[in-house]
Length: 211
Image (cartoon, rainbow, N blue to C red; front, side):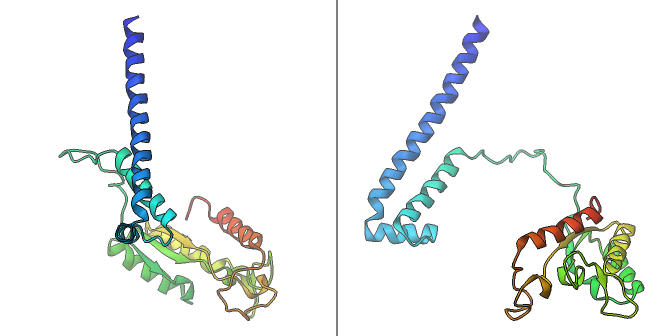
């Protein structure tokens, strides 16, 4: 019986505290609404939130107030645990797909590993992989034709050999994905975003667990 009473008391305290926070936030919003129509206060809210309309300024300050009331204080103890300390934080942008020779790719990744980099953000341009049409992953820009995946498989393999993780950047829609081709620019979005989704699925299916 005593245990149940203690549990009910704790639950009541938590509920009362939550209700107090909500009421305090609502009261603060009412004050803000009253002050928002004062020109000097309105300018202050603009500089604080960056919002143009009065309603959005009030909403912004209300959100900031709610965060301030409910956020947990930071752990500042001398031996407080720190997350992700076992993750190498150093990375670099690479464009290894532009290298024609495998030895150049290998040398660059070896140098990055020696310099202490743990990951790379590497481009996987859509236009360079699904080149000539949907579902067509053959590169016929050279003779003889070859798989468009070859250079990217090489990058993934060599990165793994050097203990470097890959953050793949999928971009640059091919011309065939737009009825107007490259008339609006080579970076214009595709007409059908499902085509891009299928490309992403193809990359994920091929390199799942490796990038």
